[in-house]
Length: 352
Image (tube, rainbow, N blue to C red; front, top):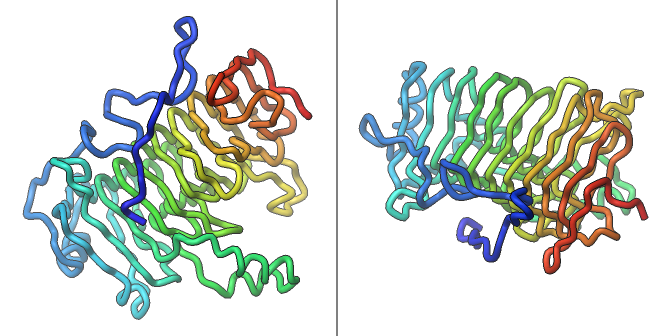
């Protein structure tokens, strides 16, 4: 799974009369991070090589500290998570770092094969950063048979949730930054933003989080985030949110590489929550992304209170197909449609 192909072939953006459509790299490096990434953290103390050393470092870390895990290290938390319900807790203002992309390094790996890993890593306060690491979960599969037995055969949600699910990183505080990481194999969510604002998720390769019914790359409850310059592949929804009235995200310069179990970017509505409203978050801003998946790019399952804007994206679908499904308070303008011979639509796509 962690040898998944991450090279993006062909153009990911188009310049039409000085206006850019699709995803571009930025000053920090290539979309997806890795080699050449300019935001790497240099070790300022002896690198960590074992789980016990990592736990000791986390216990004593103070705001501003960097805990660096050496390049080829694999920290397997499986037994401790299963027996002790271990969670790696990062104090406020602390950076947990690896060296993904430096001199060809894949980055140190932190992993758990325990199905009920919820989460593996937790931020204990604001301004936590996780950078340059591989974060591997226990379940990269789609679980289609389990989903069928649960719902098509009528066993329901209680049966479905008897199989435990997992999260990679979670936070309930402001300013979580996750950058230049590879995250895969998380059956609920690789990054779970429960609460907080000003989260920044960028230059990651996020893939194989595709458990049917859940399976999110990045998910939100009452949280706000900027999501940019990520590579996505083999997720159910690469970006998702419950649609809480106090939530929103901006997604820009991300690339969907070609495989998605369902639509790529999602915002639930009140019908999904069962709260008697039709609210789908406060705001959504989706622009300058490249979607190579045949599935719908964006689905907004209600009405955002401050609106949604979707512009300057490059969609896989031709104009006669719906790349975006939404209801009111959504503005869709100035996008390209079709991979081989892109067509420009200045206004909203037609509804079949």
